[in-house]
Length: 236
Image (cartoon, rainbow, N blue to C red):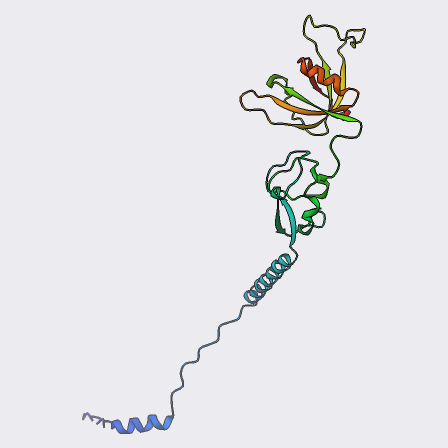
């Protein structure tokens, strides 16, 4: 049995190049576009909108700022306000907050503080007054209180007090004590209370009384025969 051997004839390289040229250029593989996610797009739009709204609010707040008068140092009740006590600030003012406008600062300089003023606070029209804290027909009597005589409750302007006469043992009778031997007292109103003096701790309280009672209270103070008693809050 004879075996036949197939002869393979090599294909010339020129022929292969001719066939490739005839087939045309090979197209690159197609890359599929990234799938769009509706949720991500919606979140991006929401963030952009929120950022724009924040900028709008900030611009609106800046444009709505108001120049007002501020307090820059401690001012006691009854003290006359000076330019050095006051400053100015630009704030976003709520309509419910009543504050003196910076343009009106000259109108409050020279007025008295109706309440104690603290640094950093806005000045309200109701916190100043042109009236004297001592009313017509009243007198102002300063009373020095030793540390053991100062009430633990802070003394505030407008607080009603009783000025009680407590003569020492063997003191001469004034002739004004009631027949039942109960101590005599006079109604007063706190106008101002100082801080405790260094070293002695004495607190001076300015008390307004009627013009008729003023001299009597001053006499009690001079003999150290006076004690200050606070009225209950419901009696104020």
